[in-house]
Structure formats: C-alpha cells, structure tokens
Image (cartoon, helix red, strand yellow):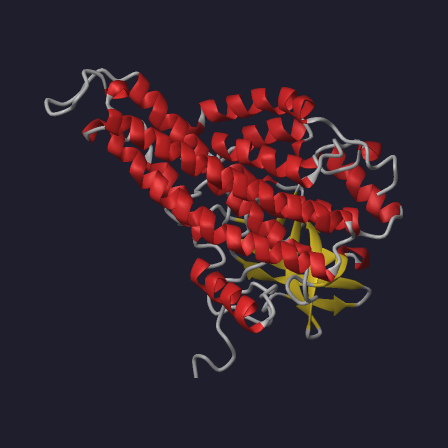
Length: 403
C-alpha cells in the first residue's frame, strides 16, 4: 500500500460507529429467528455505515482497517446476529482481491464502489452431482457477447448483494464471473433448508442466458490457482462467526441466570446466581468464548502479515495452517459450550421464547463447512510428511465415482 492508503481508523473510532448498530441488530435477533425474516433492514444499516468498506483504504472512502480490526468487528457482529458475517464472507474476500490487484482505474473503481455501499455475494457451489473438479455452469460465446447459464446452491449473501461472484466453466477453464444481481436472467431463491444459519440467504441462484461483458470475466476461478490467501481468509470468517456465537451464548446464559429467582430444593444456594455449580458453568462458557476469540485474532494477525507482504506463498501457507489448526480448536470449544449453557436452569431454559437452541444449531451448521475431520487429516499429513495443504475446496462427485 502507499503511505496514503496505509491510513487507518482506530479501534475506538470503529467501536463508536458500529457498536450502536450491532446493539440495534441484536435486539431483533430472536424475533427474526422465530419469523425467519431475512435481515434486509439490518444489512441496510451496515451498508449505510460502510461496514463493507472496513478494509477499503481511507484514500478511496473506506476505513483502512487492518485484518485484525475487521475480524474483531466480525466477531462482534456475529454475537449480534450470526447470519450476517457469513452473508458478507465473500464480499470481504472480493475487497481483499482488489487490494492485492495491480493499481489502476479498475481497482480504484471497485474500491470506491464498495466505499459507497456496494456489496458482493457469491454463487460458487453447484447442487446435486456438481463435480469436484469442474462446473456445469458455463460461460459461452454468443456473437460478440458472453452468456452465463447454470444453477448454483449455497449462494450465501447474494440476496443482499448488488453483484454476484459466480464460478463457471469457459472452454474447459474454471473462471470467476461478476454478475449484476438484478440482471435479466438471474433468479434467486431463499430455499436453504439447514436447521441453522437460516437467515444467510444461502439458497439457489439460477442463471439463464445472462449477458456478461468481457471485463466481468475475472480469470482463473476459485481453487485452481494454487496456494491462495482466500481459503484461510474465508475459513476465518466462519471461525469469527463461531466465536461470536460463543460470546452471545455466554451473555444470554448469564443474563438469564442473573434475573432468575427460581431454584431447587437440593441446590446449595437460594438464588441461581449464588449457586457455585451455576457459577462454574458461566465461568466455563466465558472461557470458551475468550479462547475462541483469541484464536480468531491470532490467525488474523498471521493473515495481516501475509497480506501486508503481498501474499507470498510461504506466508499464505502459514496462514492456511494457522486457520486450519484454529478451526479444529474453535469448533471443539464452541459446540460443547452451546450445549453446556442449558445446565444453568431447568425446563424453562428451553422455552421457544428464548430460542437459546439457535446458538447450538447455528454453531453446528457453521462447523460442517469444510469438514473438520478432513482438515485434521490434512494438517497431520502436512506436518508429518510435508504434504501440500488443500487450497481447493470443492464439493461434488469425483469422476467415475458413480460408475
């Protein structure tokens, strides 16, 4: 970055801007969960405050935040509403791509667009038997234009976005394609049927003869360019979500206990908040939230260093290893914590009115992304045998697997 671009905003400045917004978002979290109301208004509040421009340099209208500052705020946003950081995950990766791009008018145009509220969603994964190593979605030539056709699933955040970053095949090459979300031929559906993270808008996107300009075909697609910062970055957003869930679970349990007057005949204290066993549960929840947060910020520091150095291969590999190790640790901290919280009370703690079960459901759903058992094996193979870490995360049938 230039000296001008290196200007940034302090943590205190950022907190003053975003803490009131996060608090406002948190107040409606249970009602949104009950009603399954997609948080369009809440995304609008973040857009108006330029949350999506945290990493955009001050020179171009953003905050010039560091990677650590970004992930610190993503944890706080996840504590308010765990769906929102996940919905913005690819947006922040897109911004990072622009920061790493060669300086010029195109880079500046996108950074300035983000600074005035532009958001980018994604359409990468394909439903059904979409193969591990190629896409059914295709970009094909039609005279002097390109046409995009195909169907994607897990299109996280795209219903909230202005542009959709789609992955497609072009003459046997995997490419990224940037599409206007409201372009003719684009249809989006909120049909994600997971039991958690229900408000991420992670449903189906259909592309039917969508016209794509040459400059919107971005080159090699996701997972084909070798070691990249993007996989650790995208994984760390998921871990920030888990850390935020742990933080909110501890806070919800603590507030519920503090206000409770009903106890048990066999309790050693008159009030639940004075019961040493209940106190122990709150202490363990607090420790899990602290450790999860610390793990996320530790990886953010590694990523900060890697990106500041231009994403050199050795730094990218170090970030990937750190994110993979943190993934295993954070999952093992947060999932037990979101079950342990129910030990603070009796039957009333499972009231639908409280929706405390959303913490476990959301954490369990986030935790199945990029399966941890596969990541653990990859770490072991890397450390024992020097095997390459996996930077291409695709899901689908391998060629010949069904034969």
